[in-house]
Length: 150
Image (cartoon, rainbow, N blue to C red; front, side, top):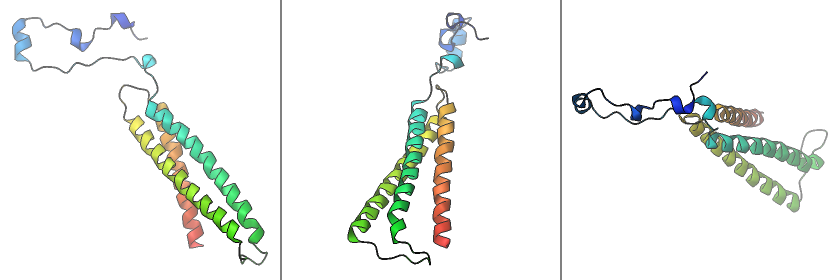
């Protein structure tokens, strides 16, 4: 489908037909053509995809831990009993870890967007990672809105 790499004539290898033509035209930027099958995946996209999977698993783990911590203090009527000092410290640590996971998620989103704008590398992984990070952030934001509105 594509010509072999040795048969491709790059822009910087073209010779003008006359010396006056070279002097009259402004300098063209040197560009190189990279066939699509020779491109590598964006490093930013790969890093973003890894961060999206890690944060997704982190949110699931944090949700499970938070539920198991608060469950013993809930009654059938709805009000929450007073948790112990040790439980409060554990919940505070859980909240701090949640904030760290959220920051990592936002970093993953930024890396995915940066990977989407790469012109010399494949962008598929970066696009998938950006979508996953965005969906996770929107889902967590929607859960916050539902919990706060009651």
